[in-house]
Length: 277
Image (tube, rainbow, N blue to C red; front, side, top):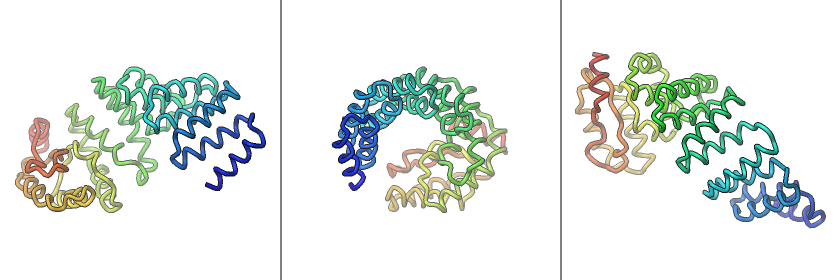
C-alpha cells in the first residue's frame, strides 16, 4: 500500500509521465487490483503509444483477468514496439493455447525457443501444443529438450516437466527411453514427496513401481487433496496387481474422486510388461 501511495503521489505531480502510470499499474497488479492496473496501463499507453513494456505488462494483467483475446492484442503490440522478447512470445503462446488456437500457439512457442534456447518452460509448452496437434514425434523432441535443459536445475524444476516427457514416450511406446530415464524420474518423484509437492501431473503417467513407492504416492496425494479416508481403496487396488508381471502401471485421475478403480492396467501397460518381463 505504501508503494501504491508513492506512485499515486508521483502521478499527481506529473500526470503526463507514462512510466509513472506503468509503475502504478505494476503495484496495483501485485496487490490483486487487476481492473485498476489495466486502467493504469491503458493510461500509460495513451501517453506513449509506442511503449512496448506498457503493453507487455498490460498483457500480464489481462491474462490474470482471463481476458485472453485482449491479452493477445497487448502482447502483439509489445512485440511490435519492443522487438523480439522471448517472454512475450511465451505469454502469447499461453493465451493462444487457452483459446484453442493451437497453430498460433505453436508458432509463438517456437519463436520463444529460438530467442531463448535454454528455456525449458518454452520447450515444455511447445511439446504440449504439438501433442495436442497430434504431432507426437515433434512433441517428444520438444519435451526431450525441456527435460535435458531442466536437468541443470533439477531440484527447482516443476515436476510436470518430467511427467510430460515421460508420458509422451508412453504414447509413442518408446519403452527403451522410458527405462533409460526411469531412475531419474523415480528419484525426482521421491524428492517431490519429501518436499510435499503436488504429484498431480503423475496421475496420467506410466512408471515401474514398487510397493513402498506406491504407498508413498498414495499417502502424498491423499494428504494433498484431503481424501485420507479413500487411501486404503487406492492401496488395495494398486497392491492387487502382480508387480512381478506388470511392472508398469498408470495412476489414474479418478483417485481424487475416491472410486475403487484408482490403479488399472492400460493397453500400453500390457505391451510394456511384455517388454520388461
